[in-house]
Length: 167
Image 1 (cartoon, rainbow, N blue to C red):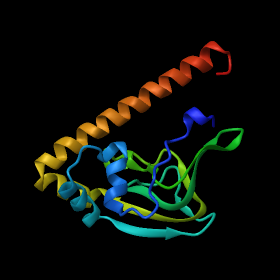
Image 2: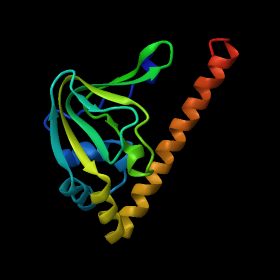
Image 3: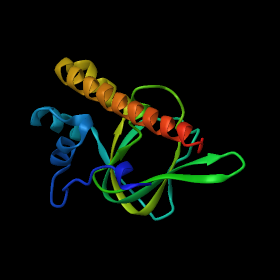
Image 4: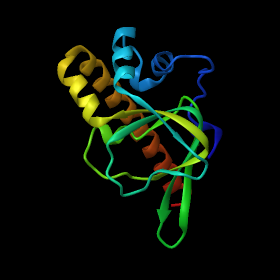
């Protein structure tokens, strides 16, 4: 992974979960009261090094924000084995696609270094968005922008690979 592919490092030392959420693109622009409502429906989970958080193909129903430690995201490539896609550190998040669709997990996530994660379950978020339309509007538009940005980056990478005969 090049430096350009790495998620931005956030200053999260000594910050509350609400303050950390305010720094990530999915939750940017939400008022403090809305961020607190998201924090109130979340829980914290801890994982040991090399413990699976979820596997490619599992049903997805949770979003994760790394508070401490690191996770490794990988996929199994037929004929090649496991291919590490990224190592994410505090302030990074993963699993957000499962909050939007009912598809299975697209990758495996393992605890790379003992970690503490903030977790939001889809069911709880859906309930919150149903009762708070203002929160739902801002949050869903943030997600659309985030997914669009990621799709553009993927298109750029695919174009590069195709034009350099590395595809």
